[in-house]
Length: 319
Image (cartoon, rainbow, N blue to C red; front, top):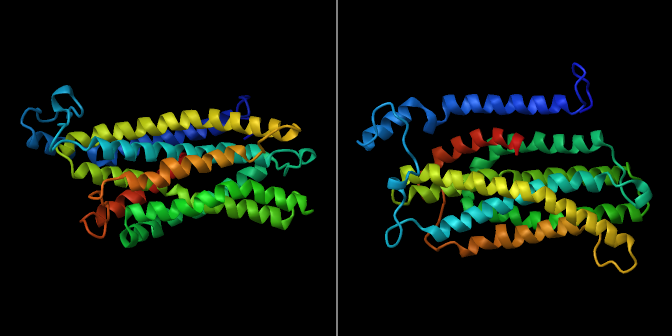
C-alpha cells in the first residue's frame, strides 16, 4: 500500500494485485474444476438424455428442483449448514476488520498505536502458517477426527481466544509494558496465528460438510450446484454485514468506554463475534440430525477430502 504506480492513487496497486489474483483463480477454475470441464458436461449429458451433448447442464432449473417431503431433500440440515457457514464467514471477516482498528488505537487512548505496516506483518505471519497447515495437516486431522469433531475442536478454543485478545493487550499495557515491547508483540502475533489456524480451515470444513450432505440427497447432481450457490450467497451476505456490524460495535465500545456512564468497553466487537461463534457456529452442531455424520473415516471420501482441502487452501488467501 502506498506505492505510486503511473500516478494512480496509493490504493491502486493492492487492488490491481487482488484483481489479478481473482482473474488467475477464475482461469484455473474454468480449466481445472471438475464441474466446469468438458468431460463433466459429457458425463452429465449421458446421465440425463434431455441434455444435448455439448450443452451445459441446467442446474437448479425449475423442472429439476429437488424433491421435498418424504424421501426428499433434508431442508433442515441444509439450513443449519448454511447458517454455520455464514456465521463463520462473519466472524472471520469481523476479526480481520476489528483487529486493525483495535491495534491502531493511539497510545494516548491506552492503545497499541501500531502502524499499518506493523499490523500487516501480523496478517502475513498468520497466512504463512495457515497455508502449509491447511495443505499438510488439515486432511489428516479430518481423517482422524471427522469433519464435525474437527469443526468443534477448532471452534472451542477460538471462542476463548477472541474475547481474550483485547483484554490481554489492555492488561499488558496497564502493567507497564510498552506498545512495542516483546510481550505485546508476542501476544499479537500469537493471537493472530492461533486465530488463523483455528478458523482459517473452517471454510474448507463448511464446503466438505455441504458436499457430504449433498452426496446423500436425491438428485445430488443437480443439487450440488444449487447448494453451492446458496453457500456462496450466504457467505457473501455475511461478509457484507460483518464490517458494518463490527465498525458500529467498535465505535460504540470506544464511546462507551470514554463515558462515565458507559456499559461497554473497546472489547465489545470481539465479545459479539465470540457470541456469534458460540450460538451460530459451535452450538448448531447439536442441531444436526443424528444420522448426519460427515466422517471421512466411515465413508469413502478420503481422496475427495485431501483434494478439496489442498485446492481450497489457496482460496484462503482471498478469504
